[in-house]
Length: 271
Image 1 (cartoon, rainbow, N blue to C red):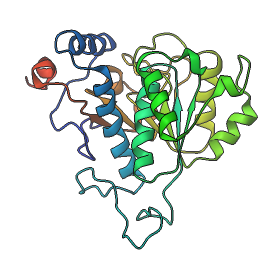
Image 2: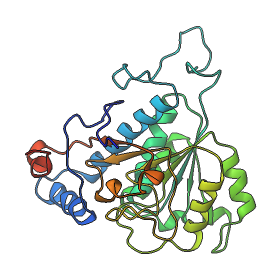
Image 3: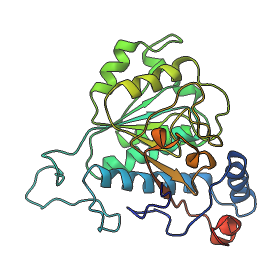
């Protein structure tokens, strides 16, 4: 599997070796403490690059367009994509952490490019923190359709019928539920959501790694999303090259999030 796919805006053009969960965490900390790089800026770069590749996969960005979304002729009343009469409907499934925040950025760019977008946060609105809370607020002010599942569906469980109806209204599912920090088996409502994604028959596009996949071992932590494609940030994750991991990641592209070369130099292939 080639983890350095050169497609769409923001895809890494240098080769970076696979990184462990701890290495990713340490790199994030150095970017914030040593370089004073705002985490929101890095999240914006990650989400925009991922959205660009997804738009390409959906037919709205030709592979040779340099990451520019398809622009319809002025005579058209709504955006059209080359492979169908209407752009596909995108459902962004967000968890309460930074992976969910990445999903919020993806949603905003897809919306700007004319895709029908809906965002479902699997959290209470008042439980969102940090950059995820910022993205939720931006989406609210942008008028993009979003919901916080546990505010609209009280209780600790996810109703399978309501969840099925939500997924059935989309053509693509964007997995922004859980990030690289996961190290224990997925339980409770998010396990139900992951299982529903896998049973939906819809193509899934994972952000950073498929939710539920162990970043270091490439094995599911109880259950993991089976993605058609994974937009991973900064570097491929250590577990992606393990036997069987490709069944979960699908095609992988490494997305540049704007870290200076001085920071990533120790991880460059042959560097």
